[in-house]
Image (tube, rainbow, N blue to C red; front, side, top):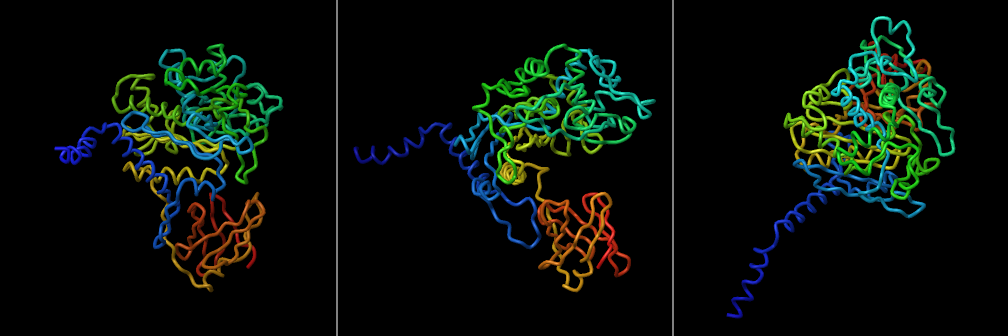
Length: 476
């Protein structure tokens, strides 16, 4: 009998093992596949596709720290951090380390504007000057018939200037919002430069107007308003829009780094333009924003916002911008870029999955590689590598593209034959760009896949277009 008992014991132990232990093992294997399955964003047909380990890839790219959170089936499935929050302090990133979210601040800030509209305190389609008291949008020839409205600010069709903000260093005099909007900070004045509603132009300046509108209406500080009405109701109790960052949070905040590894001056920038760029959060807190909007959209049940509001918010307009987030066929979300920080939030419209990835570096290239690995593991649509086809050209043919080109307002560009492609060299470019041919007139950037199209007149090359710029050939 003793022998039988010993034989049965392992089977009994297996049978009695808790489902949570099995679930933990399955999840650990899933995370390991993601960590070891990073692939390049650009994939060239015919080339073998390498798989990267996340920590080895961080070292290769010079990225100090990465933090990730994943919602699955409507719950936080896992959150994990890698690398250093501050190298000089030998402080590691944890899942509780705060990062600057950059422009992901915008869709989060947009929630308060939507709440005010639901409460009847504003109309998204009224002139924002109706609600502004401490400053007004200056009228000009473009506002004679059409006005700057909150709706147009939210989807970047208000015709406003100032794309983004560089932030301020510790010790700088921080201007007020009216001073920033009048160009008395470190950016130009925020002004209407085209008829509101006529076109699309990304404008952090617009969201700064919205921030001022909210505080003028409610007569409280923007961080306090966001905390009580948005962050805490979402469960984002450790996140804050406070800028400068309170000293009590310094020890749990990531230091920002330049792409060359240098620390950002003062460890991180200060953003009085809080709605546009000033949110401090962790991925596991930020992903709760996605969870709430996703659940309202998928269930069509009211939550922090009404379902009708969320449907409107997730309706793509010009350049796929909704009323806060960017909206694609399968996903909604936003990316962020503050000085020394990069981030991305992406949520799926049909599936209860959302992801936030944050890094403390100006080099955010690893974010897309992590997204590709996660999307492949979870079987998620809408996230694909950039695929290019290489077409070999003879050395003689390549030399037809070589020479000096001129781009108005930028200067001269040299195209030099190198190996099986071309090298783009320009004083205004931080480093040479290597291009491979995809046809007899189209080349692609091997660091991201962007297209460059040469202009030909019969057999003669006369110019090219690249990143929206047009160049004319001036010398062989």
